[in-house]
Each structure stands twice: as structure tokens, then as C-alpha cells.
Length: 290
Length: 233
Ligand SMILES: Nc1ncnc2c1ncn2[C@@H]1O[C@H](COP(=O)(O)OP(=O)(O)OP(=O)(O)O)[C@@H](O)[C@H]1O
Ligand SMILES: [Mg+2]
Image (tube, rainbow over all chains, first blue to last red):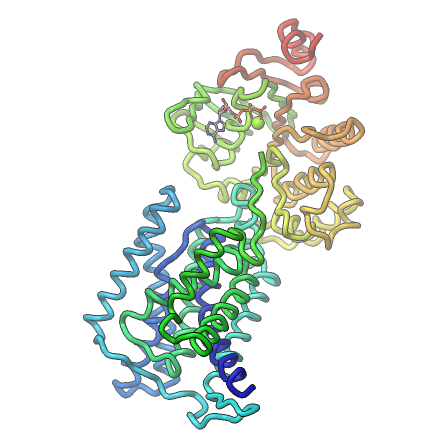
């Protein structure tokens, strides 16, 4: 039982990070049909910026703020310099552009920072709590609470503000959105800003546990993508559920089977979803109007 | 109010509008009739700025708007009720209507919303339901209400009677005829040529991307070519 709880908790913690990345995928996909494979780099840029700012003597809260600002700037630049100029190109072209941007960001991080692994001091110390025999890091609880706050804030933004509703409307029917006067290019821009912001906070929450390094973005993007597919691409609830589920699958797979195959689980999930249920758990059935 | 000159538009390499010219004066109801694939929807989308054009000019209230993005055209007072209604299915009726006013900054939005609900009581009953759950006729009323929420000077309607039961069709045409009394200018595209020409001040016939006949609504109803091709008489 203690072992089970241990695996469940570590699965939920990692899953929460996957959920945040999957949410980023979802927002941008809904606004533009683009699957932004640079999504994982937001997590990396934020973690690395915070680490190096803190190492340069900047107090941790300020370093965290700086990391968020820098990451959001990356999101804006990605949209302005890579996505917006290619407007009208096919989604496949745009997806390839995001992969290129991701490689570029990784390269910049390797040169600008370094290639070592780094951590941030956990927010609430590192003495594990005992929960039913399982040792839980306080940071795990912070990750879960932080994710809960982000998900709630995003929900409120989408459902309670006119701008959020304009984003939902754009996702539901892009032609109608343009005809009522929604500036759909601005909606895409906002989706990049919000996704970068979520990725940045995810990076700050995760780094004390998962560590960070210039190259973590690629694998994180794939995990987030698997989570978004599992939940149903385009569904925010699906992104959260898919992320948590993927985290749990990985933790139990690594715990009860073999830790060697941990990273393979995401790929198995992608393949299984593609073959067995392309709409994912919460995706809308893709029935096109004739 | 609206003047289109020599407009051309294409899908890929295939040109579907070959130099369309027509105009709509302030306060008029102008009907555009044409058969399947004539280019009516393409024309309305080009006017609204959601379909690229390759030549010609569009001017609205005396100013050229050909280079404006779609949302700027809405802000200038042009709203469209698109073909197939195109409501925001997962959003509530209320949110659909509020989004109709997304370009507005004035403080009359709440009053206008209540006016829409008075005009369409069935929408008021369902204001908290998802738009996708409405019947076809209710969705059409929602699409019309959403366009009115933009407080437009000109309303473009693309086949608002398509697929509706006869009693609803009558209702929709009565609503459109009523726009005139509110001081709205209307450009109506229809395959239901009889009813659409009957409420029109003037009309045009579009055939494979060209305007071929024009005249007052009454003249077109009596024109033998129109009677043969569009009225089945
Ligand atoms: N997305 C598209 N890609 C390529 N061709 C298109 C597209 N949409 C329309 N067309 C073609 O352009 C021409 C004009 O179509 P349009 O939809 O404007 O006609 P319409 O008059 O609105 O017809 P309907 O009465 O059926 O609504 C048709 O030949 C149609 O096949
Ligand atoms: Mg049409």
C-alpha cells in the first residue's frame, strides 16, 4: 500500500507537469491548428533562466519573475517571427516551423547557459512528509496545488471573460469568429502568450524535483503531446486528465514493471490512441459539416 | 452605402467571380439570386473580408475597405449572417449574442441584448443552453441576433431560409423586411427567389460569377428569364 501511494504520488506530480504542457498544446491548437512542439522549451527556458538568475545573486522570487517574463517573451517572438509570417501556410508547415524553433531554442540555451543539470531550491524545504507510509516531497504538493490554481485560473479566463470566450469561439468556428469581428490573429498571439506563461510556471514548479537542462524540452514536448492526444487534442479538460493519467501510467510502469521503459510509455500511448481512439478521452468527434 | 466594382476572386487557380459590380444604397433591401455554385457565398465572404480577392474594389460608406481585415469591417458597421448559420455550437446562446458585440465599446450592449431577446423570445428561453442544442430555425434566429448585436448599418444574409420549414421561412422573411424599419440596409442572398425578391427594393441575378440581370424587385419577379430560371414558372 505504501508503495502504491508512493508511485501514485510521484505519478501525479510528473503528470501535473505533463498536464500543463498539454494545456499549452491545446490552447495553441484550438486557436490555429498548430501543434507547437516548442511547448517543452518554454518549461526549459523558464527553469534555466531562474537557475542562472538565482546563481547570479538575484533573489529567488525575482529570478522566478524574470524567468516568466523571459519565457513569455520567447512565446511572443515565436509567434511574431516564426508563425505570423507563415500565416496561410498549411498546419504541417507550421508544425515543422515549431520543431525548428524548438531546436533553435535548445541550441541557444546550450550556448547561453550550459549543458549541465541544475536544480532550484524547493519552496517548502526538502524534508519528506509521511503519508500512509509513502514519503512525499513537499514540493510535490506545491506542484499539485500550483497546477490546480493554473487550471482554475485558465478555466475562469476562458469561461468568464469576453477575451476567453472569443478564444473558445475561435476554436469552435473560425469562420464565424472572423465574421463577428474577432481578431483571430490576435487570438493566436494570445494563445502563444498564455501557453508560454503556463509552461514558464510549470518549469518553476517542476525544476526542484525533475531538475532542468538545456535539452529537457524535447522529451517534455513529446510527453505533453502524448497527454494531449490521450485526453483528446483540443479539449482542455482532456489535457489535464491525459497529463495526470500519463504520469500515473509512467510511475506505475516504472515501479511495477521496469524503470527502463518509463519513457517508452508515452510513445506507446501515442500509438495506442492513434490506433484505437483517435479522438482521445474527451475529444469531440470530428464530424465535419457538409 | 456598399459599392462593389469589378470584383474578382478565386480558389487556387480557379476564378469563381469574374468581375462583379453592383451597389446597395442606404436603407435599401437588395436581393441577389443565383443558382448553386453561382458564387453568391464567395461574393459575400469577399465583402466581409474572409475570402481573398484578386481584383476590383469594395467601398463601404464612401471609403474603400478592400484592404481592411474582417474584424475592422465589422467595426465599421457591416455584419454577416453566414450560410449554414455557423453558430458557436459549444457556447451558450447568451455568449453567442455577446460575441456578436465583440467589436463594440459603447454602453448600449446590455440594452441591445434585451431587445434581441424581446424580438426572439425563444432565444430568451434558451439563453443558457448550448447553441448546438437549438433547432435549425432557432439557430438561424441566433445567427441573425448575433449579427444585429454588432449594431451594423449593413447586414449581409446568406440563404437565411435554407433548410427551414415553410412557417419558419415566412417568419425569417418578415424579420428581414422589418430590418428596413429599423433603418438597416440589407443585402440578401437567396435561392428562394420569390420571397426574397418580394421584399426587395432592387435585385440582381448572378450566374457563374457574373451579374447578368438587374432591376427592381418587382421587375425581376416579372422578368421572363428570372421566372423561367429561378421561379419555376
Ligand atoms: N473552398 C472552395 N474551394 C474550391 N472551390 C470552391 C470552394 N468554395 C466554393 N467553391 C466553388 O466556387 C464556386 C462558387 O461557390 P459559392 O459557394 O460561392 O456558390 P453559391 O452561389 O454560394 O452556391 P450555393 O447556392 O450552393 O450556396 C462553385 O463552383 C464552388 O464549387
Ligand atoms: Mg452559398
